[in-house]
Length: 169
Length: 388
Image (cartoon, rainbow over all chains, first blue to last red; front, side, top):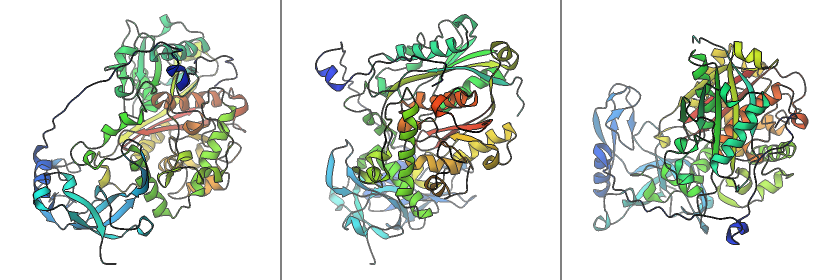
């Protein structure tokens, strides 16, 4: 704000002002529904999760092996070349101890979201959760392995992996 | 880069920032635009084109928000376009306006940024959740705070940064905001207050985060010849840059914002800046979270990688320090109506470089400053260099 300007616009409202009807309101609840095709690369990725496998894609030009897979290399901007069956192990690249859920509900026992670099890939990794550990014990670089749902319960979703759990301690 | 015309900021205005404004988005946009015009003595008839920055339509529940806001933005029957790069919008909008004039197409441009987040119930955070990948991430039930927590934690891990060296940023900005008449969260708090505030997703705590806000800001741009007729003290936009990283955000090393560096290099080259650490007098990097101010100081090459927390801790970035950072009070103190918050930083550069910032005025003889914003899926950097 400039010293040359003495007055500025804007009228603050409190939550109570809305509840007490001090201002007129119009309420609106959108109802939207979507169905997303998983596409070529993520379609195969999800199908392989149902098989209990994590797959990535490799570009022969730059050599990168990436997951989640895509059918093109965004760096070389050409089709990438082959599917790579990866291990279901990796290391924790970064993590958080979250006391809030998706809708910001407070939880005492934290969720542990993490970026997990899957063994055999060249770039950082995927978003998933870490489980079966005391939150205090989670460390950068910790080795983890996927805990899969039983085959009958898998649906072809990232949640076919329940979470990643520490190994080799 | 060859440009046809040098571009100046000649006027600026903004509304108060607040959690919930009675005014509609159009009314907020009007108030800021009107103030910017009045500040340089121009009428709407003097404006040849208008550019509008506003972030997701989902906040308002109004599709095509640019078109909805046109009348409040002063763009009735004028060449008009909305721009949007998420949180980076507020510093991209003046770049968009700069393009209109530097290209030689126009001599004046009104740049307006508006955000009204309070309409989204119960909390505008819900509108952010759809930024996560619809196929591979949303089924995990992510919260927006997660990506910041993951980035902040990675940054802290790589450089071995203790939390208190980040918390000082929140303390500084909320205190700086006490001198800003439009501020929403001006407060005197301590490092301990930040460290003892509620843990949302470690390492992110309540007082690490800027608020959600309603508000608007506006500036008037003019070509060199026209600017010199309007004012004796134009402030020049001498460098602009923008850059986006991959949307596969988990495939990046989050410890460093390479895309901000790329945007800064573009802007510095245009402005003829070879050594930003020596040539930039003060800066307004984007600070929606306290660690982001430090992350962005490094991306803007105002210090070495990992060095920003020490500069903050040692007081170098205080308003009376050697390198004042966010003298306005930033998003943490003034508030964060997304697009308007970015343009507020451009307004601050304008007022500081014209010596009009009053109690907020950085000491000495500031001649060159940089503002920056950041957003989309943690992937865009937008940078503007301004000179008195």
